Image (cartoon, rainbow, N blue to C red; front, side, top):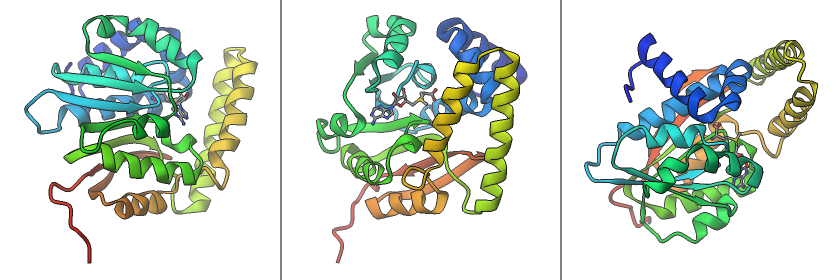
Length: 255
Ligand SMILES: C[S@@+](CC[C@H](N)C(=O)[O-])C[C@H]1O[C@@H](n2cnc3c(N)ncnc32)[C@H](O)[C@@H]1O
């Protein structure tokens, strides 16, 4: 896949995703253009990882397969272990991405993220990648997941997460959420999808609740406390951003 940002590459990317992921992708793109863009950015970050050998990637919250597809097409020598504990979502990914399962490059796991990570060996994974999954977690669960991500990554391995990172400026954050709600209403009333509108609004209340919201400074501090270095937040657009972090090659013994 061409990973530059040219119009031509964007069109072929969208065409491929619409073809493989189907209607879900088209609706998500209208509702939240940045959500589909973030999967593309996660794929690019995987493609830029410098290790020469084949990569094994653990994906948290594969959903219908949008991010999974972006990772699989990022480079040839990559295999994905895609975790999602919601069967309805994972069933769609299994249908959409059967070709990669047949090629031996994709394995699905239906456990929850924390349990699945706990079952993986120390220092065994090149990249843990995810999009729009960690913000769904309760903060204490998320802290435990981050700790497990650090444990399973090989020294030098990467954590790549495209997600909703709430702004530290709460007034600005609230204004962005209000604009987001307005967009849901105009797109979904226009498409006569009131059931989906209800679902998104209800879900947004969960995302924004105090024990879920993944505020930028707290989230980056959580990564530092887990031991990550090279922590970088980039590509912020509204409440969305890409976060990358590395497990140091030499881990200090503390003291
Ligand atoms: C919003 S979707 C994101 C899907 C895809 N990555 C994307 O960007 O379109 C979040 C996914 O995370 C999954 N998920 C949420 N909590 C989870 C958990 N604790 N363990 C595993 N999967 C989880 C949900 O089932 C859902 O499929």
